[in-house]
Image 1: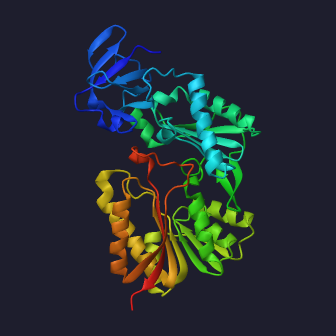
Image 2: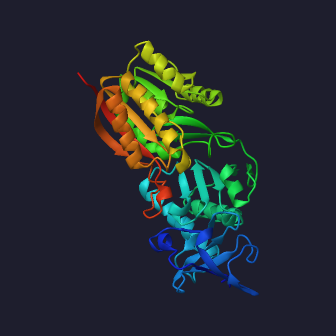
Image 3: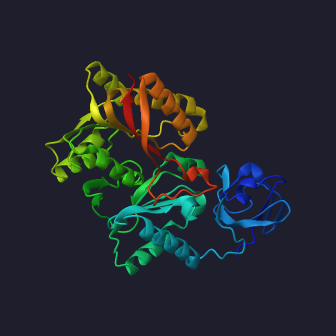
Length: 410
């Protein structure tokens, strides 16, 4: 084990003690490394090193990886300060993650590793049939990515799953905060990066190279399934459709007509390919529109729908922009509620961690009042279980998904 120890300031480390996984730069008091003992400063310990973390009174808090360029200075790997971080350790973490998915979700395509919620901080790995897509957001974990992929491939092979290709999508701006370059490309042999998957009976082409995030939003898997029962024989509007996932679930469930809209022409092109793949072109149509411009236009035309689905991107990625984001969420929800026929259904969500449950729910109350409707809650849901919510790590809980019946106030 390493000889590097950091000690926190008195009064710091409460989040760690409560189950959190991060040590911030302003919490550290003292550093002990080969040839140095004294006040903490950067440049002494090698960036990416394993470090033991202790409270001000020497109480052991765990072992983690050092990211000297980030405000999140240490991400814990284990609460056991003497844990040996080697291949066996990572194999144990990965096997636990895989066994959990086997018990909770359809694993044909799923998120295999969800960072801190799987006790592998800063790492995301998605499985699309026989292809893996990895994203690394932490400097401390950058050096482990190839080893993690090798170990995971071996674990999957034991269950008869042979991975034919791995693609890295570490192209998020978040990497810049860690002092890392944004990168994307093959890890190992090249392969066709358009992968065909099946989810909830719907087939999709997934572009793991150029699609958003890792190519497909797996976190909505069971929320999409939940909407199917609402859509049979119905007229459906799917806003922010991306590559058509909610719209296609409506179509496969027997909707009378579905219109999916998104501002991205490339997303609509892929959605159109997906609708052809499923043989639903007669009932499911896709168009390129700015949703904020389209909804008031539809309202002026007195259009109405049995089901309206709102699945917008995160309008806020920081606390500073919550106020403006709330305005955006409220506007589309007011418009969406007005477009739902009396007794029809609204499916609406937020994928922003900062737009928390309380803020999102209050916004919906306010939107319903301004739209002149009453909302009758059918379901409240969160992200799919392959994106587990880790209590005491708030960042792992981000997706809020409501289904309401919309009753017009008369």
